Image (tube, rainbow, N blue to C red; front, top):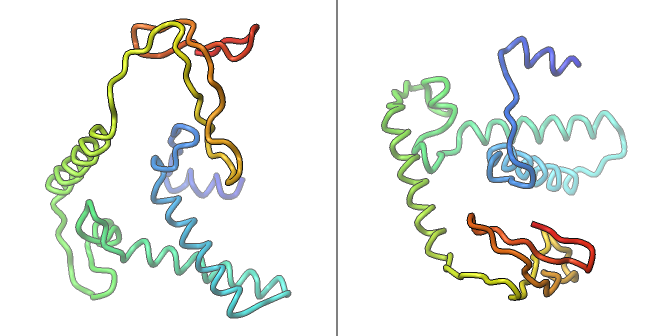
Length: 173
């Protein structure tokens, strides 16, 4: 409750993202990865059993991650996020003037370029009723099968989705 009150006080509002899509929250995912890596190193170098020392390790890892995220040069921004937010370089005490319209254009161009690369990997195929398909497993474990099936196609819809028969009594779209 205290955390939610602090967020409300500072005008921070939550945004819904699609589930199982870490790209939508990539900055947060990268921060978690950085904190995890830092904790792994700190715990290896300074093994601890005391709760206060462990709390200090976590505080150190979080502050290191926050500083790193503020000072690392972002590929789309071509500057540091801290420099854009505060108008100053985060290491040298010099002002930074950000052209937000140019930054937006560069980000959009980067998105378009990545989309073209992703679309090149796709291929067109027209499914028909009676064809059999494999259903990919989401995040399988190392030794688990990557797909299940084959499942027969029951219906091909105009928007490209399929209805498949999983068992004699179960269908899935």
